[in-house]
Image (cartoon, rainbow, N blue to C red; front, side, top):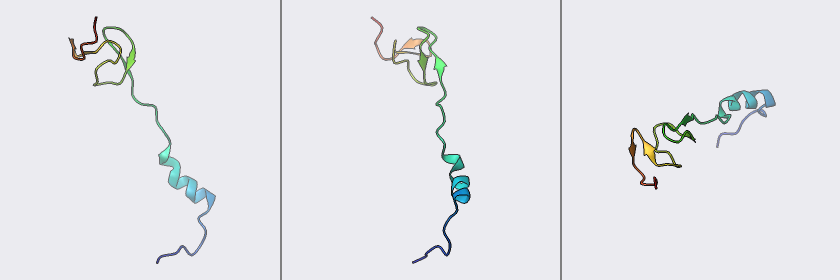
Length: 59
């Protein structure tokens, strides 16, 4: 079994983990109701996507 010869330093460990930070998801606004939504997905508020009502939530 492979065992490290030396302890991994804090600097080396933190350099390796520098790419693991969380990022904010991309957001856009709904054309119909103006709420914030994920792009390329139907609006959870009104069910509108690309000019049509796809979820049937509009009353």
